[in-house]
Amino acid sequence: MSGVRISAILVVTGASGSGKTTTVRELEARALPGIRCYYFDAAGVPAPEVLEREFASPESWQAVTTRAWLERLAADPDGADVYVLDGQTRPSFVRSAVERIGAALVRVVLLDCAAHARHARLAGPRGQPELSNARMDCWATYLRGQAAALELPVIDTTDLEVDDAVDALILHIEHLRAERAAAEQQARNA
Image (tube, rainbow, N blue to C red; front, side, top):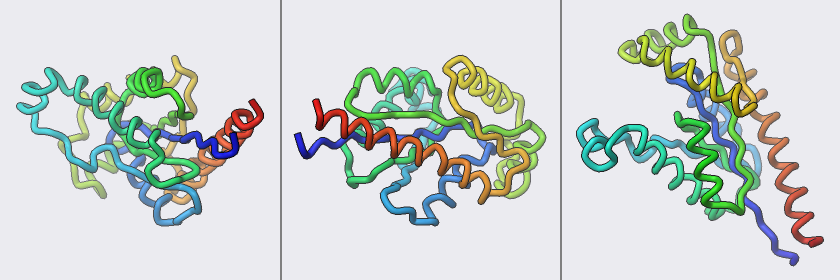
């Protein structure tokens, strides 16, 4: 089996203001060979009434969209070594989708920060002060809990410059790239 290809996908999740999109955009700007970046919300988030009518809840939409993205990237659309998906999604939804798609290495890393940093980013550079609220604080706490329960790596961006956050993310990408190469070699030898 000489042509074995296994897709490797790194899902970068976090609450609004955690720095995930900024970090992934900066990673993309570096144009590293073999790395392709995608954005969960690229197609847009449906209006609340559409979410309710077509998906019954925002959580159902998130689960369906997570699965669709992972299926798309598992199909290896660009021949990349590692696909990076910036997505504000539950790690448990990622795990559930992976069980359905198989044949891909999928890892999750959480970008997180202290509440005061998230609030400052949302009210300042992001220009989305309406997202700086108790609900987002609860979401960040929930994601932190899922990361702990699932033993996922966390990059704390509270005091990191963007370049440092990208460097930290690259370490996870390179680990996944090596894991992918080893899995392909094992499949060829089988």
